Image (cartoon, rainbow, N blue to C red; front, side, top):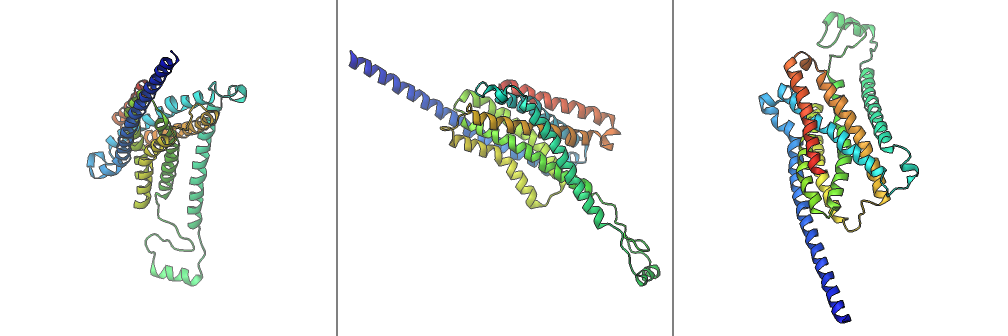
Length: 336
């Protein structure tokens, strides 16, 4: 009797092991699909603003591109408000964490608020620093009398005036610097979130969880990449810098998934350390993305003289930003 019981038990154990191995194999298959799909979507999205520059009606100064950017900003805004921030609250109020202090203070909201303020300060200080540097370079300087006399005799060259001062020709360097700062901060906020999402997906062993994430994340990365690509395009970096930023965005989520696959046997998403790290980073990312979407993407375009003077473009931009936010919100229903 004992032998029969032992044999039945071992058979049951073997069946459970085979079933678990099958689930792991199936999950790995979807993870590999996710890596390819998200890589293609990310690369296509962030490259789109550069690829359409030669298409006249899709160039960055055309109305259609304003609408595309508004849609992408809506996706980014929805990412911050209804995806990342709720996840941060869930992580930092988990029953797996001790009640004091995590359940007694809204850390997720506080960190998001502080990261938004910090982003504002960083952007203002960096822009101010470059502006002051530019003004110092353009400070008047005194020349000697002979030099002044020569200028009086010879006339004024383009971009110069008589006397003891030099007046620089008007430039858009301040806007250029600001666009570069915006693109770098926006990529930072996106990268933080993308790493967490990639590792979480790669560490998951449930195919039913991974399957809806493939479509949702591909959509998310494409339009998030379009918004980022538009900012990088306006910043007019050199070819090397553009290539690095595009590759970094394209590869970061697939790399996170690969890391998650590698540590799936030892990574415990419900451990206190993992929950705290995920919660704090998600909170910071939510604050950065919310600020960037509202202030640097939407406000900058919605206050643009071109849009203010075109009521049809204004209505279209309002519609597309709402469409972008609601489309991603609808995808989250499938995600959850």
